[in-house]
Image (cartoon, rainbow, N blue to C red; front, side, top):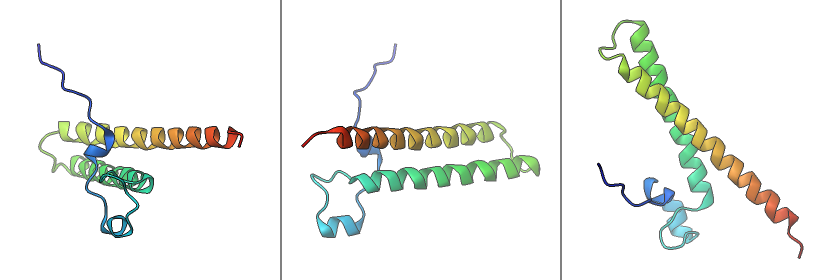
Length: 103
């Protein structure tokens, strides 16, 4: 039975913070700011969708050697969209929670 590793924070999977945020000092302890997380998720959706479209094209033209590549690319694209939707839902939930706070 394989050992289960510890749970890693989501921001460990994101690339380093962009140069613009490093210059302004908007980050704390090197973790990405809110906008960086959403931008990375959007870019990831675009990238995985392009990979899926490329795999579909290669399969349709008979140039794809391994049909499992299309299945993997399709699953990656679907998961990246689901992650973006969940991030949006959590942000909207947090926003609505903040607006309900009384001062």
